[in-house]
Image (cartoon, rainbow, N blue to C red; front, side):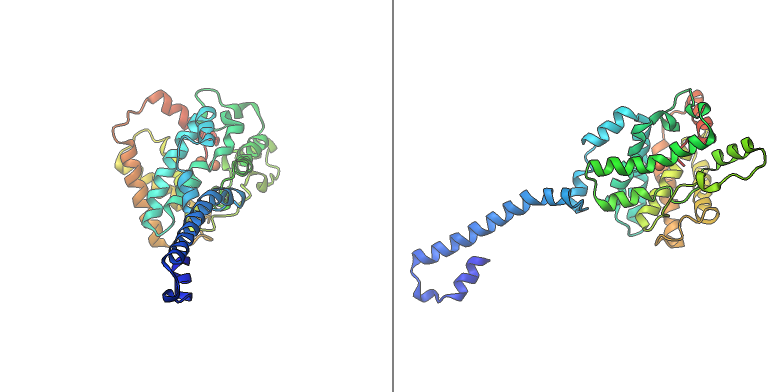
Length: 300
Ligand SMILES: [Fe+2]
Ligand SMILES: [Fe+2]
């Protein structure tokens, strides 16, 4: 480009072949150097300024990157959950004009902080429930703490700010009702401060964050279904989404329309049905998972 501008600014007729060749070469060299600089500097800029450029997000789709390997090694149940949530959330985002790539990456990392105390979360438990050994207040603190831990770890690994922001909203201001009820039983009728059992929020502020919240809750609940028939999955998806929408009012700050929610429901049913198609359910394992969910240690 520069070469042509230079050629344009001078009268070619007054230049000899050597001068023209020199200007063209200079222009080409400038173009190549700019390309090298842009490619070399961009990854550092993305990392230093935590930018969610498409190339940075594509880089984060690599399942062999260190932070996801760490999750797979230290909290394998959470890793499986996150991959399943990402599959559901990405498919749903594509249907409602949200950003599928951003939604997928936020899903991969949304629970990364569970690495700190994996055994307190249902998906990583086999038989023992660690919550039996602590008070409902402590259980609530541990569950709520996984949001802060996820953000801390995400920052340490330079995840883009937009990804961190979606991660921070994935439980909104949901009440951890099981431990709230347990605390009330211990108080024997005395007042229990509900805020101590509520995630701090904010509620989902975008379509991507709302989709992650819904996929997260639906995936965790689907694991507890004794049978994964199409109609059971459909009933479950409708119940969970209705609950988040009407009982907990968690979607009122996102941009989702009722039409969008309908499309998300259909996509979740389709994705979950194909995920569970041909998978054998083991009664013993399922009953353990169900117990964990009803104990409130599941990530819902
Ligand atoms: Fe979570
Ligand atoms: Fe989760």
